[in-house]
Length: 211
Image (cartoon, rainbow, N blue to C red; front, top):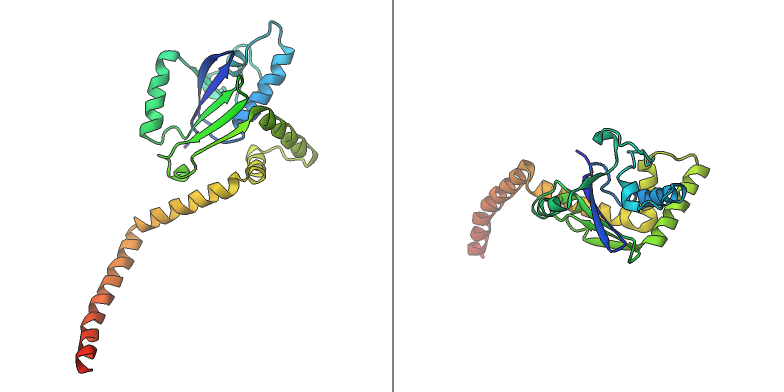
């Protein structure tokens, strides 16, 4: 299972959509945007962020010649195909988050797919892009000072610092409860409880009559 998402980058009043197999989380969009902004300062020709996004490998390094798709972080979605991805997002759990990076309006919006049981009640979250990028910079600085380089560890720290950890724990607890209620074990316990009530009911009526 991957962490599949669609990234919508809004820049200079244009929308560019990308598919990612491993970027459905709250940290990757801001991290990749920060990396792209840093790369943009170094490239000649005032390259757009959309162009740089398409050339980021799975570690966030810039590759002028794209590597094989499995080694790149994002794959551009052609405009005519965006509608298909929207349908996939609305009708199933293949796409976990729809992420909007709106550079023009300074917004990062995470729309968690309610079709995914592990995100069912998460809803939508937004953060100002400049604040989000600054948070990423500080997080990486903290990680460097404390020798933390593993992405999942950094993501856990980010979740706790933003309050998303509690939300994710709540929705996972709800998912586990739903899974249990639909399980054979729950059905068996329910059957035994009904049998117990059926045995106790005649005894209760007999006690009532004797009174």
